[in-house]
Length: 140
Image 1: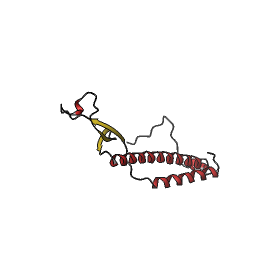
Image 2: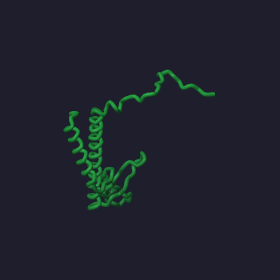
Image 3: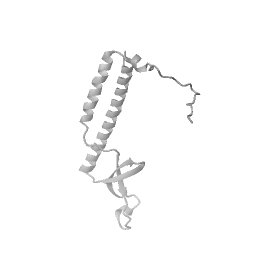
Image 4: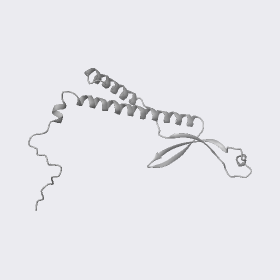
């Protein structure tokens, strides 16, 4: 991006578009949806055979909460599909927010390069600077 006003305006248009897209975000949930099979432990059950995957598929959504993995069982069928869509929506939300942050960093950087830069970086008068090794005087 150039430091031109048109470059800044393009970034502002992108910023407004990203904010509008964020306003359209639907139901979302973080995590992963995994297919699992379980064995019940009954010796006569079909799942006890070596070649059997077990009972299932069972769907589990897992995510990190406070540094620990939390899992929740999700019923097969419509609920699993809805969960899959919610996870995809969360990923879209994350992508939009990363893009919005990067766009705003670029906007802020371009604004710093403008004519207001000298006013923002000027040192206030009547202030003394201490040297790197100077320590404040101790009052007794």
